[in-house]
Length: 566
Ligand code: TPU
Ligand code: MG
Image (tube, helix red, strand yellow):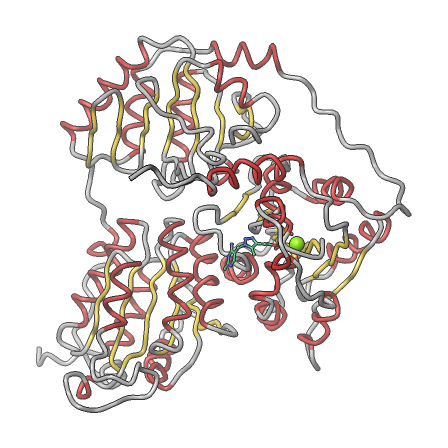
């Protein structure tokens, strides 16, 4: 062997992205990454998908990772990367392994007196790497082809293990240099197994905990998917036979048609019956939850104390014990074999359960209202549907939808970046199977942040259905704290689709003001296979869910707490 391989740093990276299951990567071009993009294009198993800006590129990758398990975004130095960082922060908060790849300055310019474009105009270019370290689980700067393979492998492997984003910057003069060939994919795919002693001890302690409880309830949290433990949660639920509640951010991570599913637990704004069951229970087993100010409704619904067990992605906490370094899925499977049935909460639920009065159809020529809008949206939700619910009243309206088995629900409740859903749903649609019906529920205010990515849906002929709820402002903010800053400039949202279509697009923009117009628009959307359909649904400014009002009030109270006395 003469040491020469057919690989370059860029094709090595492409092979590693292929190894982790990517068939696409998202990109915005810039002179620092052009050679790298050429190299990535050489891999015929992967397609390059272009975005309108780097924030959207990051969110598109984030959405792709929601379906595919991982994703990559390629941008240029600073002017691109600093925009993408916001979405990477989101991927961190939401536990999604997105690899941010950045074309960086020529390696010869590091440590010299050269000033370079797209930088701060100082001689030190390390600021970006330092920033990346704060919002990723691994950040590397590749300035040599010799070190590239181990650096790339380290970043990707860590991202997959931690379910967090990673950062790889590659000097523009290094991307095309030849480098070592990649080893077996298992070196980046293999995970560290649970520590068996700890696993046994944790299961033993948990079984004892449960043996002393009569009325436990399970609470499903939003890190359950990242923990790869959705099936195992069902195993434990069935072994216990108790009620299962789901946090809003974890909607669809436990099947809603399961006989033990009793609804969304969200404190004051829980679905009917769910809060009562939690209050009535004598213990809670919380699986990979995120308890923040929003999910605990301004700290009014924070499960804590000796009767609460928190089983997180890699550690289990209960009555003074903490067991670390075990996988949640292993813990759940083992615990399911050890526990006895504890059906008391289920018996109670059946007692208190009342049939929700189904919303009656409104007169079809009456002015459109939120209840009629969501009555009609509910009818298009099938087991092949994925719903994206944007920050805003879409959270509450979305969470109230009933999901048949197989339907998925995506939200971004930890990061909560308005405008997330449009690029994220685009990325998701790039990844998803052909027969999936993909729906975004977004507000007018949110839409104004990232509207451009509708053009990319048009470009790729993706039949996403966007329900844009035009309530003339930032209603969620109105409910927390009102002022002139919650009024926004109205747009012709439906007309915007035509602007994006330009000469060749097949997107459809429709504006509806009555139930009849909405049902016609939905009919058109369902047969529009060649591009997205945006349905602008015009409702009153104060036509919002009761849940949003209660929640907004309690969040405002939590925000307004005075500083503790010094
Ligand atoms: O249903 P609705 O009217 O509440 O939704 P819309 O119209 O999308 O308004 C959302 C209003 C909103 C803001 C301005 N929700 N959260 N914010 C604060 C915010 C500001 N900037 C970013 C990037 N994310 C945020 N969450
Ligand atoms: Mg709005």
